[in-house]
Image 1 (cartoon, rainbow, N blue to C red):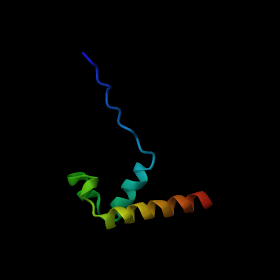
Image 2: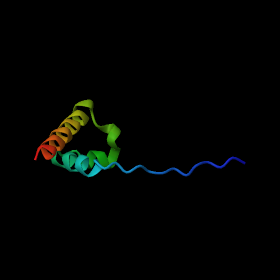
Image 3: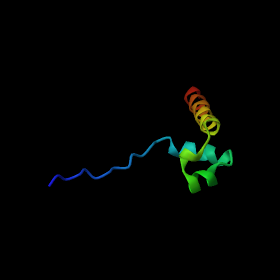
Image 4: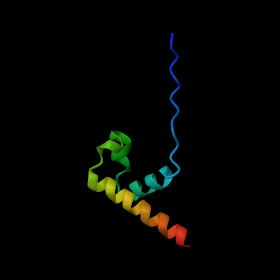
Length: 61
């Protein structure tokens, strides 16, 4: 019998920042109830863009 590997959940180091921005945009309830896939491309792009801006600003200081 072949044993399957246990699934290991990867921890994204940017997850707290992503959740913070989603909360600021008022998308947190939608994400909790329907998942990340329920966001439109525009909403997901907005989160990604703001994450990039904040990471750049942090690295410059």
